[in-house]
Image (cartoon, helix red, strand yellow):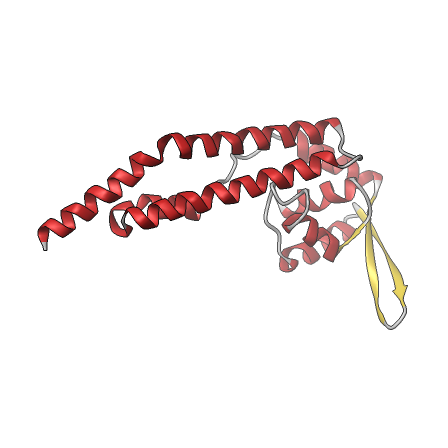
Length: 183
């Protein structure tokens, strides 16, 4: 997914400023799809406007600079639907936790145990966030489906870590014992 698709998606659900698009893509319900910086959002919005896919209007605020509010045009909605019809790219998954786990032999069992505990805590917090979004009155059926999917994946993540933590802890423990024996 591109920043272009993300901007069109957010605007499909309602008008927004560039700042609001950034916030929705980093802290809001669109944060699970793609990372987008201000440095990529604003040039994308300018291109979308030049192509007639979005319109922009300025809203004056007392004592502040005017806000630029972007709206999706019918052409923009058609472009968005066209982009959605293309096969999605493979999901991208990056995990700092997995890097620590991959280096279990170097860091020892205490670090691994703490990393697992921290990861489980992080995932539980994400599940709580999804549950909060799910409780919102405007949650559409398709949104509920993706929330349920995310919750299921995260629940399985926790289950795997709880059921298999001893495997990676033992790897770290064995490496630590081998180092101690060599000294």
